[in-house]
Image (tube, rainbow, N blue to C red):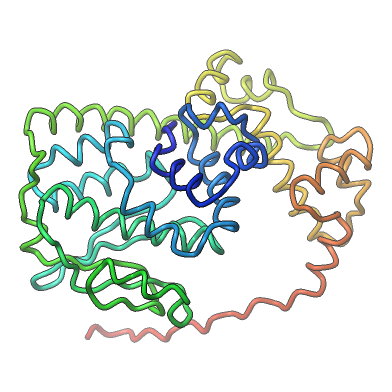
Length: 343
């Protein structure tokens, strides 16, 4: 699913002193593409690069300021909901259309935990968590016109409070940074608060539109997954062609290209991604040398494989394999004992 990068985020990035055009080029995008709808993957690439250069509190600022209408039908469906709780339910329902992150709910006595899971790591993960938490609270305060105060905020950073912990005062509630999951707890009375932008007719119209978009997005994701699986199977020394993969999937080249394009992808991009994944897999096999791996991935010469791997990982195949050899083996978690009887 394609979505326009919220203008508020771009303004905030520029305000933080980042060169947006250079950032776009490093993310594999033309600067002009930032004014057009982007795939979730392209947005993630861009913001992951930005996160490494941004102040650690950027997610809190951007999340507080972004306007939900910039998220298209999903934003309007949420804004036109009857209550704050109903709006959060819609945001969670359509979350996967816009990103690989997830929102879920855990009702408790008198309040509900809104749990947040983000698909990212490092500084970008912290930025996304802060953004999501600040956005949810900002949405509630803006559209209920109430000084909503969460009961608590939990962030699974697995570390002591960050240096910018004072910035979390915007939540006006206790904040814990070392919890096993991230969540924000809202009182049931706040969740029942009506939205000043509530409109039943608009809610139904935008809800139907968002549902159609979600179904289309799921179909396109399934197509991309099938293409990736077919590419992995076909990568046996000769580079698979679009014609070959379309035939395996029982569709035409034109239709396959269109479905991928609608999801912000291309056959060439998926082919490159699969080659990158397989390269890492093959380097874990000590019996294969780099010349054999180069052949299996369809490269005309080992030097071409070397350059591609350097582009994918900023490392040489030999350095990557050496790091694998010296890395400590992952610890296996002890499986909890299970009693046969019921409590």
